[in-house]
Image 1 (cartoon, rainbow, N blue to C red):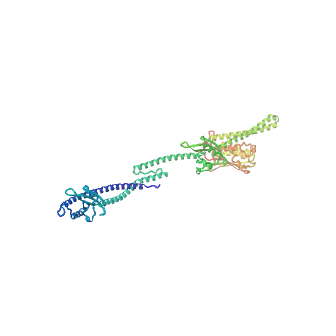
Image 2: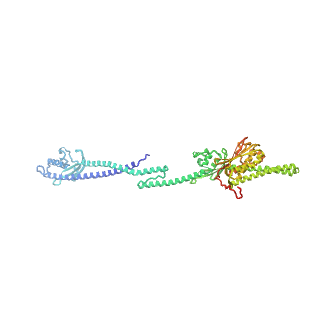
Image 3: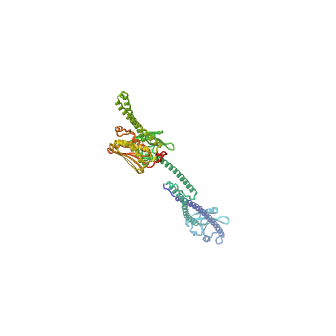
Length: 617
C-alpha cells in the first residue's frame, strides 16, 4: 500500500473545509438574494399594476369621445407604451375577454388572446394574479403581476399586467457565483499555504524524531531528539529519549555481563561448550576451541560435524535427554589426552529447556600420574623384592648348613651384604626423593646466593675416587664469579648423581666435562660423557623413577633407578628444569637449568650467605 505524505492529507482537508464553507455560504446567500430580488420585483410590479389600474379605471370612466363606459384602445396603448418605456417594466392592458388592448413592447393587434394566462385568470377571479415563467414572445424568463380593473359598479372591466425580466436577477446571482469561484481559488491557495506551513510545522519535528529513532536503532543511544516546541510531539520525543536511556543502560548491563561471562569462560582451563536442543553449537570458550581446533564460525552447526568423538557425543545426548547432571570419561587417542565430561541441562528464564552445557576437565596428567604411581609401586616393589629375596635365600642357605663351610658362608655373607647395601641405597634414594618433594611442595627449601664453581668442585671431589678407578678425567669449566640462588647441598647431590652416572657409563680412559654458564637470563649446568649414549625413544622417560635403559647393566653397576628422578626434582625445587641430549655410541649430555633470578611463582626461604657466629658459611 502506497503511503501518503502529511501535506497530501492535511491540504485536501483544509481545502475541502474551506470550499464547503464558501459554497454553503454562497448558496445560502444566493437563495436569500434571489428571494429578496423576487420579492422586491413583485412589490414593484404590484404597485405599478395597481397605479396603472387606477389610471385605466379613470380613463374608462371618462369614456371614448366623452361617452362614459367606452374603451379607447389607442389612448390605452399609448399610455402603456409611454409608461412602460419610462418605468423599465412591461405594461399590458387586457380586456376580460383576453384581448390585448395595449402593450408597452408590442402591437396589440399582433398579440394573441391572453385570457389563458394564469396571472390574468387569477386577477379576474381573485383580483390579483402573479406568475413567473419563460416568455416565448420575449425569449426570456419573466415575472408577471396582473391586477383587475373594476368599473363604477364593481364589475371587472379588464386586467392590467405588469411584467419584468428576471435576467437581471440571474445575472446578479451568476456574478455572485463567479466571485464565489474566484474566492474558492484564492482560499484554495491560502489553504495550500497554510497546509504547507502546518504540515511542515508538524512534519519537521516528526522527521527529527524519525532520524533520531534511526540513529538510536543504529546503536547511537547517547543521541537525543531535540524539543520541537509542540507539547504532544515533545512528549513523544521525551518518551523515545527515555526509552533510549533505559535501553542504553540495559545494553551496558548485558554487555558487562557478557564480557564478564566471556572473560570468565576464556580464563577457564576447562573446555566449555553449549548446544541447543537440536544439538547445534551455540557457545564455546577458548579452551574448547583449541581442543577441537574450531572457532566462532562453527556456531549454528551440528555438534556431530565439529566434534567427532563418540564418547563425547554420548555425553551430549544423555545431557539433553536427562534432567539430572551426567558424567563420562572421554579418550582422545590422536592427542593422547583423557577428559572427564560433566553435562547439565540448560533452562531458559521461563523454565523451558533450551539446550545443554558440557564442561570438559583435562585429566590427562592425573591419568599419567596414576599410571606413574602404579608403575612406581610396581617398580619399587620389584626393586625391593630382588635384594630381600636374595638376602632371604642366602640366609636360609646358611641356616640349612652352609655356615659349617667357612668359605661358602663368607661368600654368602658378602653377597648378602651387597644386597643389603643395595637395599639401603634404594631406601636412601627414596628418602631423599621424598624429602625433596615434600620441601618443594611446602616451599620450605632455603636458597642462598652461592658460587656455582664451589658446588661443582665439591661434587667432583665426591666422585673423583670412582673416576680415578676407571682412569676417567673430570673437567670443570665454570667462571669463578658465576653465582646463583641455590640450596648448595641439594644442588651438589644432583650434580653428584649426574657425574656418577657419567662415570658409570663411560669406558676406561674417557673424560667427563662439567660446565656452567649463563645464557638468556638462565644458568645452564651440563654434564657431558662419552659413553654408550641412548636411543631417542628413552629421552622422554629417562627422568622417571626406576626407569632404566638397560635394566641388567644398571643393576649390575649398582644403580637404584632413582638418581635422575632426584636430579629432576631438585631442579624443579630451584624453579628450574632438566634436559638431555644423547646419541647412541657418542655419549650423552644432561642439563640442569636454573633461573638467574628467584622465581616469582614460588616462595622460598632466602638465606644470606654471610658468615655465622662460628665463622662457617
